[in-house]
Structure formats: C-alpha cells, structure tokens
Length: 107
Length: 125
Image 1: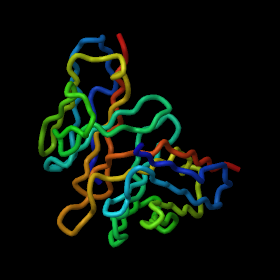
Image 2: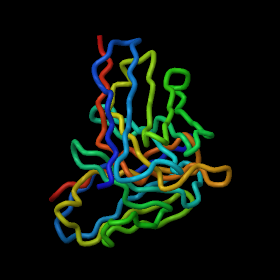
Image 3: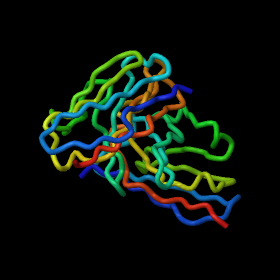
C-alpha cells in the first residue's frame, strides 16, 4: 500500500492568511493526487484532482502543485468557510489511500 | 440538484449483515466509476471499494474482501454495498462517491467528484 503523510497535522491561521499543507507519498504516484475538504459532521468535498486541477465550483484561492512524491495544497486569502480538515489521496493504484488529515483552525 | 443519498445504515450485532444503498438524482451514474469510503468515529477517511461503470472492474480493501460485495444498477441509477460478517471495526459512516470518470484498462483508478452525505453503520453487541 502507498502511505500518504500530511504535514502539519493541524495549524492555526487567521482570515486573510495564506496557508500551505504538504502531502508526501511513500512512493511515486505521478500526478494521481486529489485533495478533499471536510467540515465537522459533513461529507468530504472534492477540491483538486490530478494534483493541480480544480474541481468545478472550487474557488481559485485553492491551488495544488507537485508530482511524484511531494505535493502541496495552498489556500490563499483564507475565508471563514475554509476552516476545516483537509485530506490528500493518491489514486495511482489500489488500494486508494488517504493522508491522515490536516485540521485548519481559526487563530 | 446533483445529489447522492445513502441509506441502509443502522445498528447491527457482530456477525450480522447490512445492505447499503446509494441513489443518485440530478446526475447519471452510468459511465462513471463509483466508490465507497468510510470514516470511523473521530478518524480519517478510508477507502473501502470501487466499481467501474460496467461493473467489469471491482476492487476491495483487504480487510473487507470476502465479506463485502459492491454492485450497481445503472437503470435504477443506484449503487449498493452488501456487508456480511460485520465486525466492530467496520463501525463507521459510509460515504458513496461518483468518480470523475470510468475505470478502463488504460485509466484506473479515477478520483472522486461527488459525495453523498453518508450513512452510519454501528456494529455492537
């Protein structure tokens, strides 16, 4: 199985800040990397696929980059609705695997 | 409105069975792979199973192989997960998701795009 490791596990930021979350794959996954957002008690929401492509309707303040083993999710100009937990997932091969999540909290 | 709605969750004793359903509205499931993902209380997301649009390709995580069976009915625009021999560690919210594309011989797996709201499965005596 491909292990996915996110860092940090949690971070605090203020509205208007820019934040970056890192995801590292245990082996190369090319660009088969997705990012999801989840708010408490809610279903995940798809944000990014193919490492850097935004899902329809996702604000442009979200951006993704990377290839191979190292990936980042950047949220510029944080909005109140962005405080949530973020997960990366590789879909290079089965079993699909997720990172452990990064909880983004309001400072 | 584009929507996926899961149903069928509940409380079941260890060794029991449940059948989850996922019904789509405002979108077609035909031609798209579908995926089940679960989340144990207070834990992260865990992939469970995926099925291609034609049901030709089916995948399971090791811990559910032989116990869970995924299926779909493209005419009824629905996805199913038959869960047998349930264990306490299967306790979780189960989400269905429609992928962005279909699993083919040259492009598989595919990433999730739309998600249902989830259904809670509790396995306890």
